[in-house]
Amino acid sequence: MKLLFDQNLSRKLVQRLADIFPDASHVQFEGMTIATDTEIWEFAKAKNFCIVTQDADFAEKSSLYGSPPKVIWLRCGNAKTEKVESILRSGATAIEELSSNSLLDCLELF
Image 1 (cartoon, helix red, strand yellow):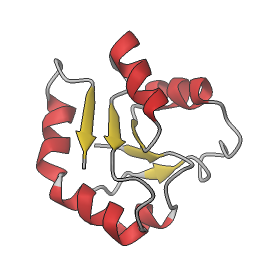
Image 2 (cartoon, one colour; image 1 turned 90 degrees about the vertical axis):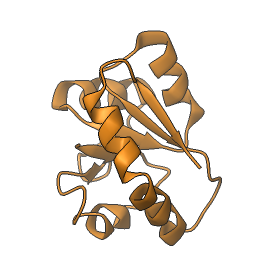
Image 3 (cartoon, one colour; image 1 turned 30 degrees about the horizontal axis):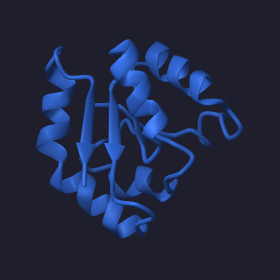
Image 4 (tube, helix red, strand yellow; image 1 turned 120 degrees about the horizontal axis):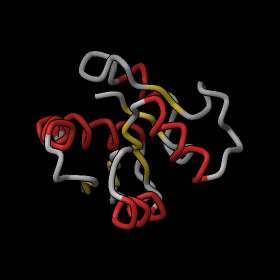
């Protein structure tokens, strides 16, 4: 699954998770540093990314509009990058299920 990390997450996650999510990117790497949520949503939809965020706005968009794009909502607060990496690694199976299940639009990970 192609993950797109939102501005509120570290760019370091792209490299740190490259072994299990080799096509991941970050909004900064895509030239979207000051993009609105709607612009990020449309970009992710067009480029087949799943948005990874700590922002409830994307989860709300997901419940209103469905997917694509799919959304991974990290509910861990202001956690260190190591903690976020650990959450995503431990949730890899659920993330793959999100990717392959057309009935799922948003995954919450704690």
